[in-house]
Image (cartoon, each protein chain N blue to C red):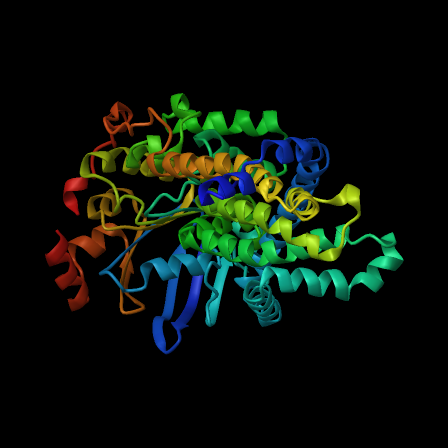
Length: 243
Length: 260
């Protein structure tokens, strides 16, 4: 794994037309740390995640990796340093599992075929799916597809990993495997931002939990503090509904 | 005379057919194939460019693509062929001499590209936006994401419509006869027509029609086969939902799916 970096968001604003989705978000993730972002639907969690790798450009504010603003970098180069995992997996359905992983390695990292295949197999092995290399995504369960998606992101040796409700589309019995993988990654020192509804995961794995509502982080802190003694009434109400 | 007999002799005069057959095979068939295949290749390539321009965020690409499509899809094929073939003849004269054949191919390609561009565009637009997002998130440029991820998926979805357009193209290739081709450049229809005009018997024309059917009917079945294949997927690809691997990885100490 390449070296992790610290990540900071400073006063990030973003509007879709007249709809203010992010209204000044701050978030800090230490090098190798894991931040979980929780909050009700429509609070701007997924949008926030997309401003980090600039799939969406913030209207105002800054995104810093190791203290350096990324907003003037080439977005493609930036995204090559940041892995992202989606709710709907988003594997490329027209190619095999192996080629899903080797395609970006070859075309973006410019690895040779042999090297790309070796690295892809290593990552598949790591997520426990070495045997599925030649399968098509549609032949896999949701849990398996999501683990392939994680392997695809990891193969690019990112410095930060973003998870956008990575288990929300999975059948309950498949959630555990994906969460275990994410916990393992966190333990290995990957810098991660995890948007999730899995409160158990946030409590166990996160270094920081940030509660978002209506485009703002209303409360952030260590999981213990956020879950055991929530200060903001909105957070209290949210926790009473989800726990 | 018995009208049925007249009908029979007008269309099924074996002697007329046998007379036309060698030229149909040695001249007409190759020319029709050259016209149709070349125009299919050129038209498909231009169609992809049109499709990508048509969904571009840049107005200066989107607009010309729109106008081009409207014009070449809206004009009768015969009019386009005449306009290009006759209108550009002086220009063609300077490039390749007094030969209307390349202009015929060009006109056919322009027409085909207008239809194919719309087909490709609908295919590309049918690919979920999340696929583009995933490719961009990996670090692909827009161009590379389109080329490696979106277009290959879009093309697959419109294969039946694409083959349909090729069938139309084979038939439209008969219209280049307007341009006054050399004897050796005549395609199936023109040869049939020439024999029919010389003998006053339509059998050679009917023979030309049979040749078109031999070319197009297999293609229509290819369309159906592709369509079925795309809808049903390949045989033996049942998703494996029982997934022991998912259970092997136990999370140390905790979080399960029941806590949502």
